Image 1 (tube, one colour):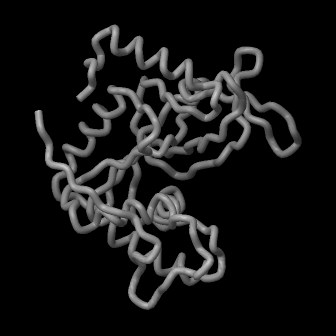
Image 2 (cartoon, helix red, strand yellow; image 1 turned 90 degrees about the vertical axis):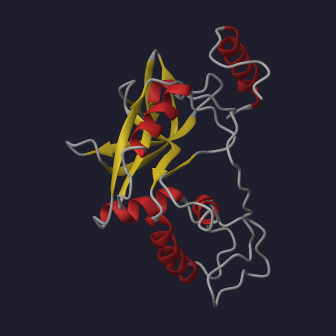
Image 3 (cartoon, rainbow, N blue to C red; image 1 turned 120 degrees about the horizontal axis):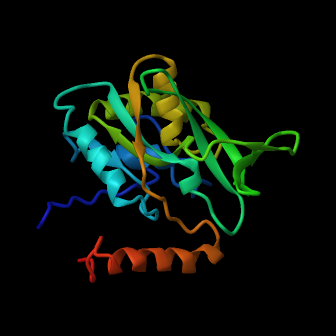
Length: 231
């Protein structure tokens, strides 16, 4: 099968009218600025992922199923919520955005936990008092797998202007996707459905993670989940 592909580029000087990058800035503007680069080529519900993470086949299925129901809907977004126990590294602690939801399964907030690992068989994070706090294995976390509709670009444009005003002299400030999503959910402008996935997330947080990730991908190929070569 063939699909049309469009390439867009994230440039430091791609900014709203009246703004120019600080002469000392070299850092890209962040994940949401990257999403904004697709504004001219995306006209339908769309997904956003990290390019260097493995999300699992089932995750793309639940995301596609949700997006296919949206049609011309506006302000209805989604996020694939991974079970925290399926996202850990054997090589050390990780940072994870723990999701909070309402009774309808909509995202109400994301709490960043910076030291998460398995301690004596239980998933735990370290609190401000340096104590290990256990959390359930199936607690949903964000791994930056989102679904949006094109109206998201309008919100991005509006909030980016304010972001630039607030961070005019901060050459390291970044316009992240969770920053905007949180603002939109808190204000009640949008809903973000948290979609459950049984998939395991693979990523190379530490160099020591690489052999394990390679082995897991090889196993999926041997089981026929993915062809070899892939393309």
